[in-house]
Amino acid sequence: MVPVRMNSAPSSVGNTWLAFTFLTVFSWGVYGILLHKGQVLMGDPVNGRYKAFLFVGIAYFLTAVLAPLFLLMGKGAAFTGYTQPGAWWSLIAGILGAAGAFGCLLAFGAKGRPPEVMSIVFAGAPVVNALVSLWMTRNEIQFNTVHPLFYLGMAMALAGGGLVTLYKPTPPAPAKKAASAIVFPAPKAI
Image 1 (cartoon, rainbow, N blue to C red):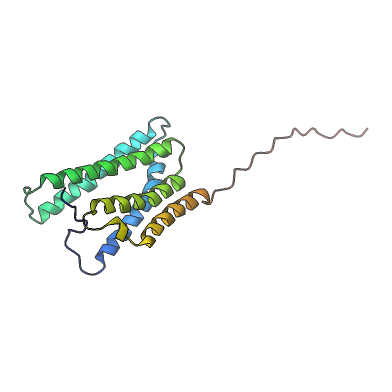
Image 2: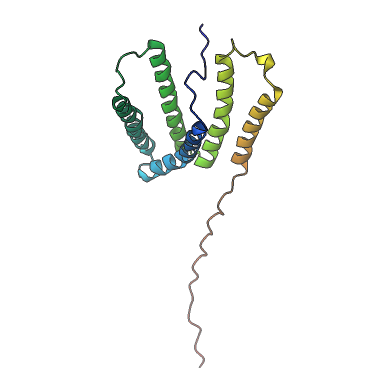
């Protein structure tokens, strides 16, 4: 198997990558709560999550099909030269991304709430990413040469996600309405 180079793209100058990273952090940070709100506001407790996912798909089409198409056209890029391995890996990545979005909606539909669901997702996903990245670069990096603090960082990410999930702030329970008392007029003195 040919090793996969994780950083094969040309490097950008300066810290542009960091700005784009924070754009992703913000976008994915609000993704779950907005997705849940859309599902709830569909007003359909049975099919609301599927309706919301339909609009996620429309958004993916607008963002992931039309936007790069216009960018490629604007740069005069040829619509040839796509490699089969590149196309397959990209397609698999897109399927997994959409499956993750659908998994979030299913979790919300199963009474998971955004603070818990997304905390677990965003604590667990970096750990999965780190392990899969290690596996995919196994010909370049040996597991026994990885610094132990790398593994400690993964454990801390999981522990952090668990702590955020377990000890998130919760709104107080709604106050129960007091039973209405029937008030009778006081008897009149004779």
